[in-house]
Length: 264
Ligand SMILES: CC(C)(COP(=O)(O)OP(=O)(O)OC[C@H]1O[C@@H](n2cnc3c(N)ncnc32)[C@H](O)[C@@H]1OP(=O)(O)O)[C@@H](O)C(=O)NCCC(=O)NCCSC(=O)CCC(=O)c1ccccc1C(=O)O
Image (cartoon, rainbow, N blue to C red):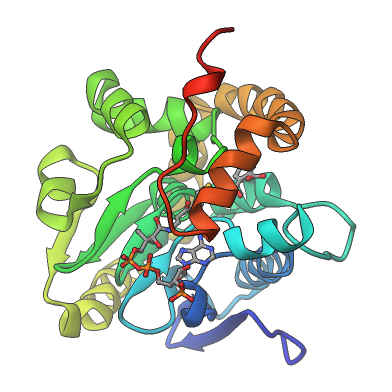
């Protein structure tokens, strides 16, 4: 953990805090960030000190704004990683598989792949200024798998389709109303609220919680296989003129023009 640059990992009385630490990029993740997140979750998994995990972002503005679109513009990928792969599927997997409750402490913007991260956490507690939404179709990306199927399970088909097909931003209050988050609190009370939820969890049987989490996961496992197919497609799509229009528009701070891609 001492060689980490993008993530911090701390344990406080049974609760592991995993923090994405790239506030100047709204805590967007690059491949290295994903590697460090996976290692942090595994560390919490293996630690007998840890009974609950909180995932959050550094600063007050962003939880996570998804894949780093500046990096993507610069190098055409998400940068170097330990394996040479961009292991976002492994990150999704470990959040689901770690047999301890994971709480998203949504301290600001949770957009794109960052929205998917909070969605996959077992519980989400949001600051009242948090903003939620998907952005892939605006920047030439998508997360079809857990990002669509599990979202529809959580909030219903119509709302999931609205989120993906319009790419709007939603307030914390709206997210609570839709069942996307468990609780909303003033920003300065977020950490204390997460601590209080973790303290309740820490009173309970770890084995019972482990089996309950595995049982709850079982019903949505097939979305992982769908996601694998989608990632294969996304890799090809990411190199297309259509996707490059999306990513260029974000970096040039203009609206994308996808009009010429409507045909097929
Ligand atoms: C996040 C915003 C809604 C915030 O808006 P606002 O509050 O107005 O602030 P801004 O001025 O826009 O942003 C502040 C500052 O942060 C920079 N920034 C924000 N987001 C990113 C980002 N994602 N990457 C890099 N940098 C970012 C922004 O440029 C500003 O910097 P300046 O230097 O001041 O200009 C808004 O910013 C926004 O909409 N951001 C983009 C969100 C987005 O498109 N995210 C990516 C969606 S797609 C995705 O996450 C892919 C997921 C993924 O990686 C994946 C997952 C599963 C399978 C495969 C893949 C894959 O391969 O892609």
